[in-house]
Amino acid sequence: MWSQIYDPFNNVWLSTFAAAIPVVVMLAALAFFHIKAHIAALMGLIAALVVAIWGFTMPANAAVASALYGAAYGLFPIGWIILNVIFLYQLTERKGQFTILRESIAAISGDRRLQLLLIAFSFGAFFEGAGGFGTPVAVTGAMLIGLGFAPLAASGLSLIANTAPVAYGALGTPIIALAAVTGLDMLELSGMVGRQLPLFSLIVPFWLIWAFCGFRGMLAIWPAVLVAGAAFAIPQYYISNFHGPWLVDVGAAVSSMACLTLFLKVWKPKEIWTSPSGKLEDGEHIDSTAHVGHSYTRSEVINAWVPWLILSVVVLMWGIPEWKKVLDGISIIKIEWPNLHMLVQKMPPVAAVPKIEEAIFKFNWLSATGTGIFISAVASAFVMGYKVREMLAIYWDTVKLLRYSLLTIAAMLALGYATRYSGVDSALGLAFANTGVLYPFFGTLLGWLGVALTGSDTASNVLFGGLQRTSAEQLGLSPVLMAAANSSGGVMGKMIDAQSIVVASTATKWYGHEGEILRYVFFHSIALAALVGILVTLQAYVHPFTLLVK
Image (cartoon, rainbow, N blue to C red; front, side, top):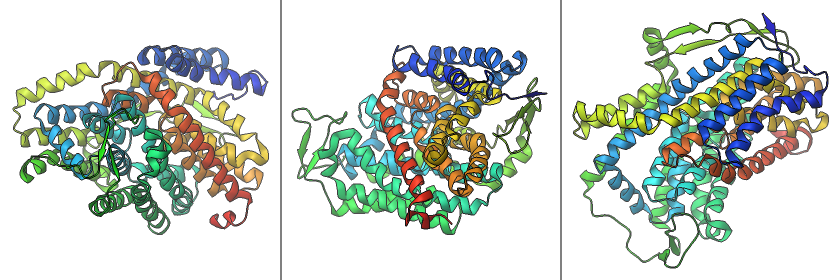
């Protein structure tokens, strides 16, 4: 048994600096030195292992085991999801179905800004609520690039849009996990997050369009943006506070899509914005009286939507806890990871009492979201008239297409798990926890850091949820407030985590440009996280915001 050490150099500043090295190495390699993503991830992983073994005294065999455990998780379930989403996209594209789908969406509005709202924000939120774990960015990124958006816009904007729904992703998994690790009431946590994020569900659509086309371009369609945001935020508040975390995103996303589509039947912008990058060139906007439509029959449009409707239904079904439990009962294989399981002990103050860490790899091959997507793709392929031999050939092409992306995801998850089990990320977290009266702000940023490191709001809640409760109780703050802040702040870190960036670059076929995507979204991520921190600070100290804390 090895116990984690959070200040191995007996100097908080030096220990924090050492803990930051792996993340700094990887992000610097990506953003500033333009090193390919899979190489940058491997560099970060090597740095993490060096820091863990020689800095934080983790046994070498346990450090290597944690990296292999993370790599396995990166390939399954994360890589499994991406592989099958892109497989479905390839199937629809080769049959011409994706072209029909693209033009049917354009028929709702030829305006790029409104397409972005409908797909990246509203439709993406549905996939976040139903499946999570990279699904929404993969789907919306592929759809935007198919609609003709520039690669950087399609990648970066998919990431920005996939923020406000994240705390309730995969049928409320992050909140359920947060309640489990903190011992706090799940419905109280759901309600508290639901009194924080609806404000950002209003802000994010405006922010998204502003990032795409500038303030004036956003102002020209503000009524539609308000409808999309309000139709999401209001159900988000009511469902989270009076029902629970399970159906928040699904209900809010359906509301947003329906209300925005109906609104666009009666309202049109003065100019139709056609720029694929958000920057208007000569002739890249047309008069609103111009005809927007397509030449396809209703039957052809329905057939083009069928694969994505199948995907939506199956992913939603695969997210139902009862259905997952049934599938797990007949398929799950649990592997106690050698040299790691029950051999690492988390220590106070990160845990209230010493806690032995499990390391069980759950190979839930049937209940995994990626399997549901695979079944959707195969069913759709038969509907589209593919033969089995053709499917296999396209699947092999997809594997070859994604080989470097899958390697990158595996390496980045290996890095994340190595820092988690070595206590390196907890050392960073404690630096945030030592901020006293400013803790509501920096505690929120701790959630942001957790998601940026792990790629998952659920993982961030598991990692820092107990620390948030302990710190809040020591400072006389509401533990429910700070535990919820971990999740609410974490959603803004989703757009910069390495896993999501690789998913975005893969979905948009923009391999090798991960550093550009990171630079594009980083300011948006930290600015929105800071705004969440300010709201949480107001809830902690300032009337009438304190009334939102129960």
